[in-house]
Image 1 (cartoon, rainbow, N blue to C red):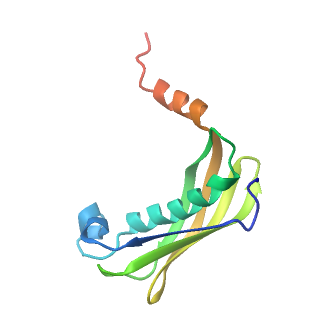
Image 2: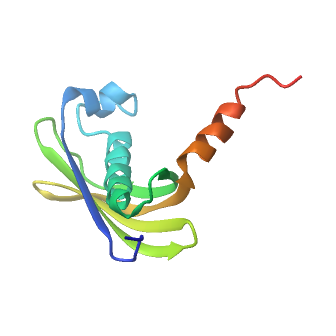
Length: 132
């Protein structure tokens, strides 16, 4: 299977004190944090790609542009959805959205790049090596 336009993904999370703006440091109120929504949107996107990837292949997020338009209180569930809108070489573009029981709470776009896991990790780890 390969990555194709139209591929969909979803992820959900219960809003708890741990993923509120107050807990994550992005605000002072006990409502679902924007960083938590962003992470959930990325989760929906990256997990949708897993069945289409070869062994040893992964993806990394490279761009995220979102709007958080409605607050969600502790106790509600938030569901993120993604759909692939473009595939250009190794770059995959998604439309992402998030909903609670009352409706849309956020939307935007996300890009991921397909990578070779071992090569990517090797390159990242080499940053920590002392050059002499």
